[in-house]
Structures are given as C-alpha cells and as structure tokens.
Length: 395
Image 1 (tube, one colour):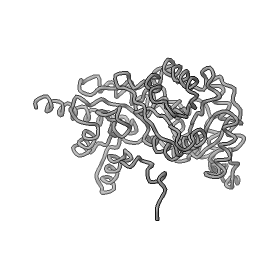
Image 2 (cartoon, one colour; image 1 turned 135 degrees about the horizontal axis):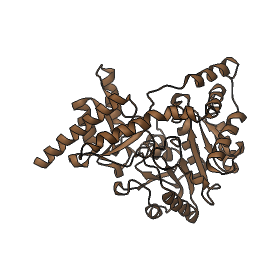
Image 3 (tube, rainbow, N blue to C red; image 1 turned 180 degrees about the vertical axis):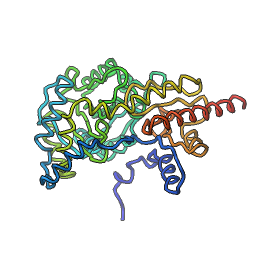
C-alpha cells in the first residue's frame, strides 16, 4: 500500500543527520565504552522536589484527562513568567500547553503555513526543523548563516529567500551553535517579518542558559506580538526532558485555533505533569540555576582547554549546552572527523553537517557529562585534531 508523500519525505529523502549518534549507541549496546557528547540530555535528573509534586498530584487523582489547552494554573504561570521576562502583556489566552517543544514547533507551523507555502529556517538548524516544516505540508527552505559571522542571522540573506514564504523559524540561544542572537540581528529580522508579512516562530527553549550577553524574545520588539509564536519548554530549563511539557505563546486568535488542533491531535498533557511544571516554574531562580550551573562550568573548562591549542576553533559559546567547534584545519569534513574520533577514541560528537551545510567542517559537542570526563574528552579531541592537521600539512 502507498504511504503519503508527506510521511515518506519528512527527511527530504536522505539521512536524518543522526548516523554517528546511532552508531555510538550500537557500540554501547555491544558493550563498548563510549564517551557520549552527542545529544542535549542533562547528566542530572529532574529535581526531587519536582518529582515529589508530580507524585503528590498523581496520588491526589490528577491522572485523568486534563483540559486540552492546559490547566488554568499552568497557563497562568507561563503567562506571568513570560510577561515578567519580556514586558509584553500576556494572559492564559495567549498560551497553549503542548507535549514538549517539538509538538509546539509542529503545531506552530500547522497554524501559519498552508500546503505549498514556504517555511524558512536558518542553517545551521536543529535536526528536526526541516522535517517539522515538511510535516506541516510546507516547503522547507534553509537560509545559510556563516561561520565568519559567528552564525548570526543576516536579514538580507533571509530576504533573498523569502519569495512565497509564510513563516520564519529562529532559535536563540541556538542549538547547535551555542550563539545568542544579538539585538541588532533580531531587530533586522523583525523589520523583515513586518515588511514581508511573515510569521516569526521563535524557539526559545534555551532561554535560561545564557552565559554571555542577554536573551531577547523577538515578541517583545515593536509590532511583533501579533505575528510571533514563541515556543517554550520545561525540558532544558528544569531537566524535565522526559516529562514532555512545553507551550506556545502567541496572539489570542492563533491560540484559539491551535487549541482546536490540539483537540484533534495531542489531546493535552497529563495533569500531574502540568502541576509539577507549575511548581517548578514558581520554585525560584535557584532551581533553574542549579540545572544550568554544570553547563556554565563546562563552558569555562572548554575555553581553558581550547586556549591551550591552535587547531580547533570555537564559535562564541554564548548560550545553550553545546559547543560548535571548527575543525577545518584537519582537512576533514565534520562527518569524517566525528567518525574517525569515534573509531579511534570512542568519543561521540555530532558532525556539523548533521545540522546543515553552513556548519560543514565543524562538530557539535554537548556538555553533558561530568566535568573531569568532559575536560579530558575535549583535550583528547583537540590532540586528535592536531595530529590530523599535522598529517594534512605534511601531505
């Protein structure tokens, strides 16, 4: 039987970008010791106090169907948090609770893209972005950023690709690059969205992980509240990746229709998960800092390791739990380097090419193992790169 073109072409007919990760997992399953620096999964678990609230809620009976838009409590909590952090008036009617940030990304594109519309996104990109846009029936079109510009978006380049576009998807702090988009970049993007009548979908799931500079939500820029859908999540800020609790914040009319979509797709998020999320979001900055602290430390460790050598370059690591490393001096592609590093030292990193062609010749390193092992693995990576670079120079 024939399957739909939509489902069979989610990955564009090619790799989904996770080949090195899958190979590392097979090696682990076969009993090999592999140092995994691949995916954005915390090496700490969800805080016991959050789990206690989850348990209390479940035992109190909040295990049945929850309201599809989200509980009033969690929607109010998210709205208050967003309003406090951005200064933009926000109520529960601007909020839809979703089963994680990924579901929010898909729903947002379903809301603003008709079949055949172009959905723009920036390269490098999180691996699911193009498939998410295709899954919504739109044409996924990448706009390259440049390593020479520290992967900051260029509004002029976006404008060149904007013919037929209904939306633009951005992500700051950025996965995979670790870059925080500047106010100048975001202001230019906002101007472009207004000029070209584009919806802006802003993925802000790393907004609590900023190491240098400040996070700016583009919804707070002039004229953008009515044309921006913000995606948020409990996954990164509170180490609740498996709980699958996220949200979309946007104009009331869009949220009303997105609630209809949720009724026909996800049918909401478990109530005891939402109660735990409400607790976590009001537990104070100390809890969020506890989750973010390991990545802040490891970024500092990485900068010390990288400062001692001159083969591997570092894209400014301003936020998120990743480093984007420039290994072009080795003469290898990111994919070849990642496979060779895995074969030689059993260290798994993600090729830059997994996130688009703009990051070719780079690798992404997740700062998700304990400090000592992380520093040792990064030192091994740098030493390995130096040997490869020497061989390339000799040839």
